Image 1 (cartoon, protein in one colour):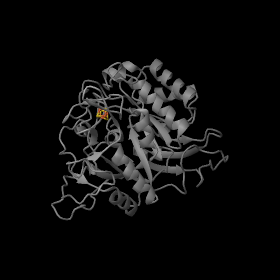
Image 2: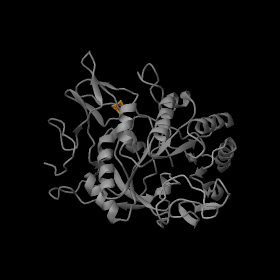
Image 3: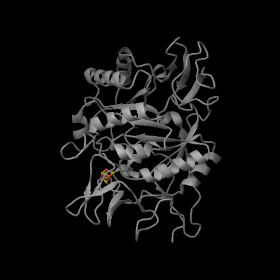
Amino acid sequence: MAALTPSRPLAEGADAFTVGTRFHRALGDGRIECTVCPRACRLREGQRGLCFVRARRGDEVVLTSYGRSSGFCVDPVEKKPLAHFLPGTPVLSFGTAGCNLACRFCQNWDISKSRETDTLTSEAEPETLATTAKRLGCKSIAFTYNDPTVFLEYAADCADAARDAGLKAVAVSAGYIRPEARRELYAHMDAANIDLKAFTEEFYRTIAFAASPPASRQSAGLRTVLDTLEYLVHETDVWTEITTLLIPGRNDSDAEIAAECAWIHEHLGPDVPLHFTAFHPDFKMRDVPPTPVATLRRARAIARDTGLRYVYTGNAHDPEGQTTTCADCGEALIVRDRYRIVRYAVSDNGHCSGCGAAVPGIFDGPPGDWGPKRQPIRLPDPSHKRAPAQGPPPAHRPEPSHRP
Ligand code: SF4
């Protein structure tokens, strides 16, 4: 018997990695609908949802990947990317398996589209994860590599354990989630980076393969993500940043970028940081060239002309696009060389050291000095009674599932 002891009730007759959930409802035809995301999978006994990790077991939909991970790394928090959240500090990052979207350009498709649990080679109780992160000097833990939406019960328990240890919790997500599950997941989070993959429903339907009404029985893909952003910014204290991966010819026109930026400005305000990152060919989109730096700079210029104050470029060498500037006096507050901070002019409580204006975000003392390091780690085996179920460390694991 496994020594892992989830704080959630185990599903009847299941292994220690399968826990019950409350996100499901019975339909009149014998099927049970998962209510986590708009895909609304309707399952008969033994069936799994599109994400693969949630499955019908008796009268409920269970999570089958509780306490299991595809690996752990300590990264700079700038890599999530978060530019206004505890700058320079290390974050313990991990993911599980499965995803509720099916992006043709996914960078972590071996995890997100896994139909095997072979990728889940590490085990971790939430408390072990938190104490390890603390011991390594991390200020936060991040749910990344694949979307925490599909393993929200495990993410919530890990976030609680992190908070108990004095750390913060970060969700890196596509924001494709229904309102009740959204409330549950983000009640446990301190920061989020939400992928706004494009600004057309067509992109979500044909490239990210979001279900569209009536098939989804919920709202469409883009609409759902915009709802998540409005919820996070206006109804929670979760510090929120946005990332758009620009793919040549798919979502990088001036008109689409301008429409996205205008929506952000009108609905979220000018202070929500926006990251434009570069695509590189992968998975089912190898016929599209990498994003030129010029495209990232063009998008950033459009965003700034729209009135957005904190706009960044990523996955490319672009020092100007990676600098945080005071919106009041124009002082260069945080100058970055990729993931290394080379100048820092923000006070310990988050004000411009030149004019004293508040800088939006979460700042707590001096910046960290983690730099660009990426450190794969192994957690203590929870059982000590069996051979550690651990594969090779994820030394070359790319950043979030949809980003290089
Ligand atoms: S999380 Fe979404 S994709 Fe997974 S089973 Fe539930 S509705 Fe389906």
